[in-house]
Length: 441
Image (cartoon, rainbow, N blue to C red; front, top):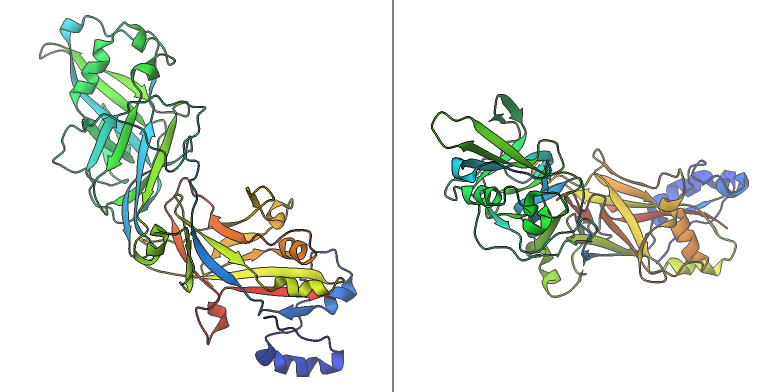
């Protein structure tokens, strides 16, 4: 239901202030409008923070994951969201044309190492991890679209050289590469058989250029087998990310040479996600909507988003002269082990158009208008200005198809947040999701 105050003269202002705790309404600040209402309308505006809200959690649709600046790798066991797993498919490119290693009878592979630069974040405990790396059996294409639920066939052979020892996860560690010490690399030695496969094509069309090479070598599939070893954000297009083959002429005194197979922005690549929707999200195993929980959930990686409706907002439509001065959605958030499970830094608002396509709210699409969405660490909440969205629904210009809150970095992050619904606390309304509506008649 909707509670509103009645306009009062200046002499009754004190009485109105005393009544705020009872009716949930008060005179608003004078500078709340969008700059389009007459001043007298804003001065006589009505305020309410008791608009009915229905909030729920939705299983996120598949999300496009190809060719982003960051990729995700690993597994995380979350006590609220359950288990999430991210794996990587990627191409490689030649760093020169018409590669010829010389007389193959006099050359042997010394080692081959996959190096990938760490990104900015690690989600979860930094446990050592067991990885498996496989050759992909289907060609990737840079102009193709790959989604979060896309999988490709791969050879079952694990190309990791030593499967018994886990890989240490430490972005601050230095790796010695030749005469240089380089910080911030995930380095995984591979079986020399992969290098021998490359050597065998020396001087052939397979190593002639980057049109034919991806047909010969489709790329690698990378996966972690450590159940809760953290999800790593990795930078595959960093200048230090590559696969390097070290080889030498036979003989103890021969110098070691190397050839670099590059990872860069011209390599087709994508992150593939799997979520088990356990713990608090277990109803999503059999349905795409979680209704009964007083909290709602948002997680990146095509996991979950929050749906919101205002079931009685059309009660305002009976007044054809009503103008919405400001509609601000306040969404408190829970904090659970902020170091291991940091909250989303920003959330986006979305709705559906007439064709069922996901689009921005009209407030977000307004040029140079700050709709909000940043996480306020002090107050532990998000706020969104949705004035035009509410106004258009009330005026009948937009059907109420509901709105959603989604991760701002869903393709390159594993962050999550637990949001408070409208009924978390019966005693303290500041703990609840609420719409603060200021309007003029």
